[in-house]
Length: 190
Image 1 (cartoon, rainbow, N blue to C red):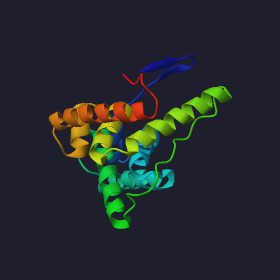
Image 2: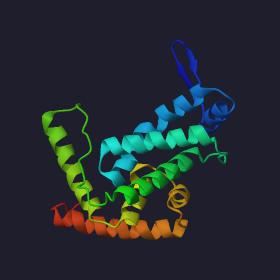
Image 3: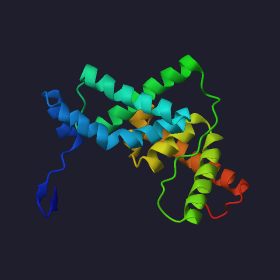
C-alpha cells in the first residue's frame, strides 16, 4: 500500500487483479496488462528480435488468458503469462522460421546526455550481440533470471525444466557471455 498527499493508493497483487477479472471486473486484467506488458515485450523481443512481433505475441498471450480464463495457482500469474507467451512465440517461430533474424538493439530512452545515450546503446548492442551467439536455452535462462528478475523456480516452470537445469544453464551462460564480452574487449565483466 502506498500513501500520497490525497490519500492511500492500494496496490493489488496479480492474484487479486486476476481474481477480480475472473469475477467480471475487466479493469483487473487491464491493470495486469499495464503492469506486465512492457517487460513481456522485452522478453519476447529477445527471442523474436522484432519489437512489433513481440508486441503482437504479448497481446496474443493476454488475449488467450482473457478468452480461456484458466485457473492459475496463487502467485503464478506472471509465470503463467510468460509461459503462454513463450509457447505462442515458439509456435510462431516454427511456423514462419524466423530463427535467422538479426538481433536488434533495444530502444534507449531519451534521458541523459548524448554521451550516456551513446554508451548505453553501444553496451546494449554488444550485450545483445553476445547473447545472440548463444543457444536459445542458455540465452533464455539468462534473460529470465537477470533481465526479468524471476526466481529459478519461475524460470524453470516457463522453460519446462528443473531448477537444477536453470542453474546449469546460467553457469554455462555466464561463462560463455564472459568469453564473448572479452572478445569484444570488455575484460571487467565479473
